Length: 254
Image (cartoon, rainbow, N blue to C red; front, top):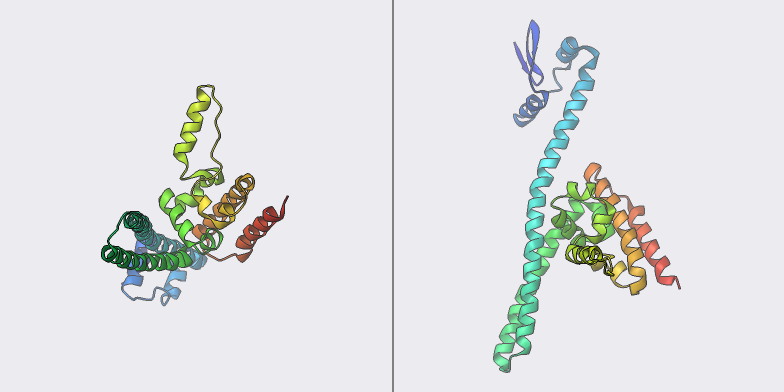
């Protein structure tokens, strides 16, 4: 009797109810499910390698998704921690301006520097995650903004399936709702042209009248980058280059 990843074989085959779980069990027990190919081809025929390949791919994708999901929860926590740290730094700076005692001001300076070091450590963690799991998003949006987008949408998957219009204005929902409310009352209102992607230097550094165009183009490329990262994970350098090229065009445009 042979206990195989795809079932039990003793004169005749009793297929496992779930090929994938059988494959996972074999791998986790450090067994090599490929050394019984002669039995596999005997009982499953010419489809054996096709089935093995399909199951192996599905198992690999499942494991990757589980790992990414776990990493994404850590990333979301890091982004929130980074926001809190930056808020603390800003509060301490404002409080320091009101101080008269030099000795106390020095202690505030020391505290701010320590917190800045912590901020740097958090940013390094975010950079490492983004380079590993979302290289295209990292190149197109930058590690920090890319991480904030994943945090806003809840996961890389949700970001990948989001429309470019939603990506463009995420973070500006309050302004959007206020504008819609004004329009419903028959009043004039300006719709927001960008949300947190304003943090991107290519949007922020352009004249106000050009920011909308750049935000729209950037959002479309972020959408593509997230999809590539989610489905393939291979870096496509021309994607980030197209963003840089569009920025230069708008910068020179009169």
